[in-house]
Image 1 (cartoon, helix red, strand yellow):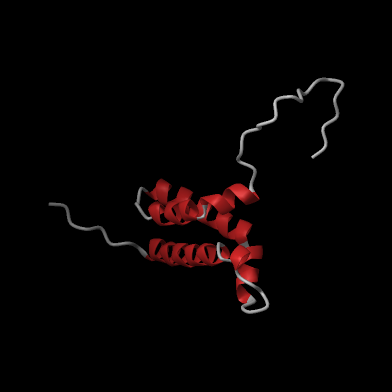
Image 2: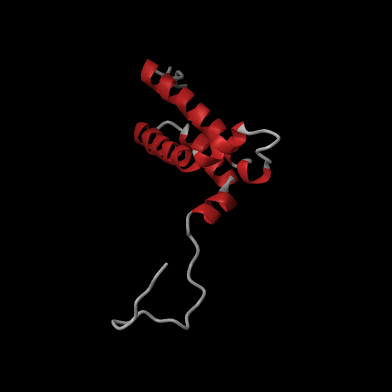
Amino acid sequence: MKAKKKLNFIDRFFLWINILLCIGLLISYLAPVTDPAKFWPVAFFGLAYTYLLAGNLMLIVYWLFRKIPFALISIACIALGWNILNRNIGLRPSTDSTYLAGSDMLRVM
């Protein structure tokens, strides 16, 4: 039987950062459904959504590089807010096939 490997100081530090970023990401998921007039701090987490998401993605890469399964914490937090991620970042395939891009066409978003 293998002995459990203890985390060093840097791994423990990044684990706490990971937990805090996940909590912040989960709070930011509440921003679209919370009235800022009643509880305003959630709105600030909603504004920081992209930064919290980027931090979680960086920590997923860190944990995968270290081969420690703590990447599942961030993956689960991102998966919980998959609908919000789809609304903020266009991950949808194009459904309109009537317009084809040609050399004489100018496309404006």
